[in-house]
Amino acid sequence: METRSPRNPFYAVLFFAVLLAIWVVFSGLLDPFHLTLGIISCGIVTWLSSDLLFDDRSVPLRRRAVQAWRLCHYVVWLTWQIVLSNIAVLKLAFSPRSALQPQIVRHRTALKTDFEKFLLANSITLTPGTVTIKILGDTFYIHAIDDASAAGLNGEMDRRIARIFEEPAS
Image 1 (cartoon, rainbow, N blue to C red):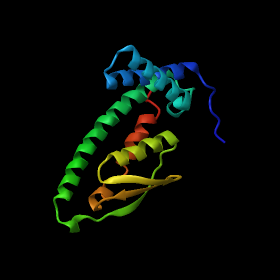
Image 2: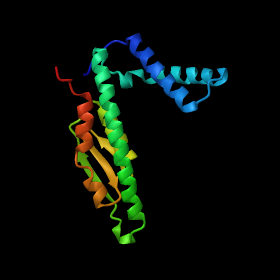
Image 3: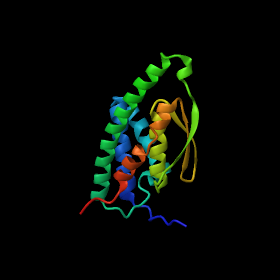
Image 4: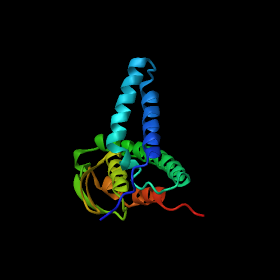
């Protein structure tokens, strides 16, 4: 059975601050009404899910900063993959119907934590042409629209996600 570190208010405050900053940036509205809504919403989300992002409270802040930096690099890479996949699906949409070869692909991952698997599942689903439909343990069941989309499930996302959370070099 996995034991969790006790709740540390620092992580909850950090999580709340990040959520509120995202709220302010995306809403663009700084009047008292909208700020109050943002504070209430971010407070509820923090209360319900702050342990999702910071499950292991024993990790030092410096390591969290390294993980955040690596996550930013991953998001840039993922965004480029989404663009490339959009182009491939667009080409597929204008090709003859025989080009479609929908299939269910089983993909095994070596990722350990639920958050890493969550990140992988959402990355696959965000990439056009693939949708994660089921996760059983370490096996992902993914709908791919064609052979090229299925071939794109070669483990590169897994490796990049694992790189985000690995121990930094000393």
